[in-house]
Length: 292
Picture (tube, rainbow, N blue to C red):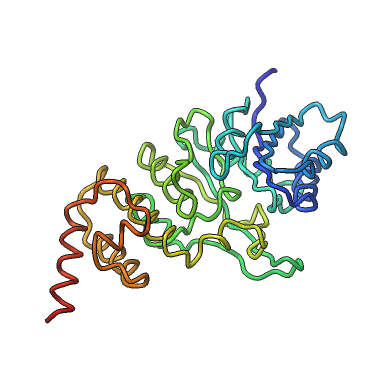
């Protein structure tokens, strides 16, 4: 297949109505040099049935996973199948805001050849189609991000992958060991390799913030998942950057919220990797503080 400008990668799992909306939002785009990659992780044929409605679209490619990959490996599968110069991930329950969105995404990367990653503001809707808020980073956050990608450990103000576009030359993949902080980890690694980015304050995508099958619903407040993933991410960041007391204190607040006081507590949360020395010292300090 010949190379196109942008691959719109839609990792899908059930929710046929949402997928149909996502696909329609792409097919109405004024910018036409794109392909759509749908990777299907569903245990049923609901996604395949939606794809059949778009027969005859030569730029729509569908892949049914032989065995469920889970998130984010299903995202990686879609990216691996892509032929485009740019990668535009679009979750199946999100959609492009208007007919100019894709062209505006492409323009973000084309205006600066030094940039590998670009992102935009996003409108967040509930399941009834009501606008809840607009996710948009502040100017101060953007300034800090340009010099320190690790700031994302304190809050993901870039947003969901649907709000991003990046060059296919980026070799980073979404870490399959993560689910809750997988996007933070990905953005941090991409920006560590190349700190240049572009941002559009215009909301180019619409995201669903309260879908019942969202990963956010599954992960938020889940002690095992949150403790494991935040510590795993902390360990990765610590290995590639200098020590940050602020980051350690952020980890401490996560431990406190989930009652983590010892290595045993960490083991109960599935932590099976070496713990950085500063985390061991943090746990020891907490025990001394509580016993005094």
